[in-house]
Image (cartoon, rainbow, N blue to C red; front, side, top):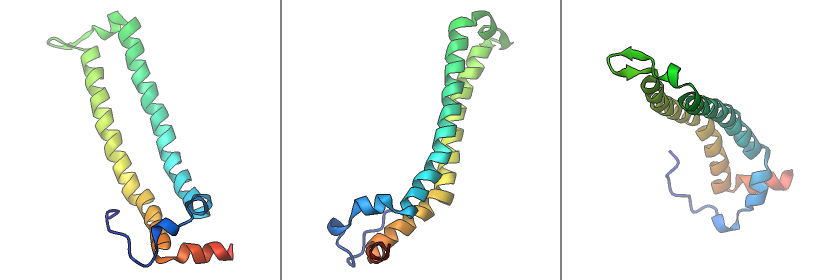
Length: 122
């Protein structure tokens, strides 16, 4: 999707990337990206620090056996790994659905030269 070679219609060295970055389309892309990343990052960090703090200060709780020789610390540790894979999968789905179409629009405008024409009209 994003690995196609740029077309020869526009010399990418001549693109005003500062204008692209200041454009409403790019700002929308950034806002959409950040609206996903920052809340999820905050939740993951809180979950990670909760695990570390429990492991450091709640020894009795973390050593409760769940079954056999598996205790709560091991279950929560594995949940950390599962969370990492789940968040990665969620982000890929989100990026494919919401971020990639916006980025592709911007790239297409740059490659076809439409961005410069629209920039002149702004």
